[in-house]
Length: 126
Image (cartoon, rainbow, N blue to C red; front, side, top):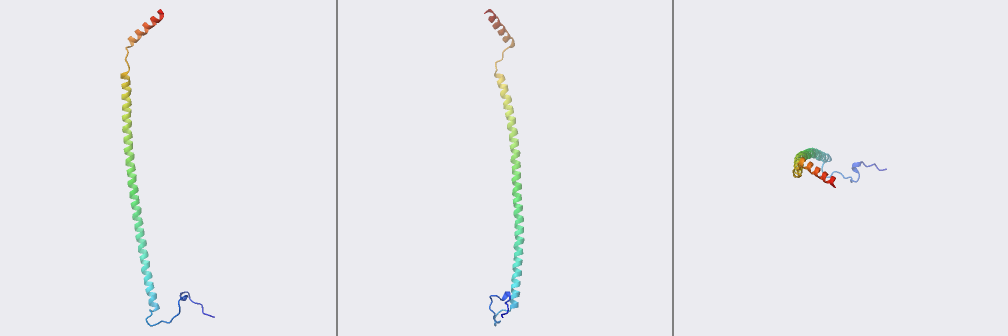
């Protein structure tokens, strides 16, 4: 019966160390060093991503604040404009009413009473 292969030996032909082949321990150390460098690079990328995300969030919040300030400013301008137009409209309506009253014919109440009496006399004569 064959001896079971170890996981690391599967698919790798077993060959004796030839002269010029790197030492397996040296290969392991080299791979461990590369792994440590890769892990350090991953941590650096994570840190940069976290800083970038924070900076991006701050920029978004700054834009939101600026937009809210602009909306508040526009609302104030609109309220002031509406108040101004309402005051102008009220003054215009007041002036219009006065003009209408001024244009109405003014009759002297005594003249009107005399005319009514004359008319009443004419009506009685008929």
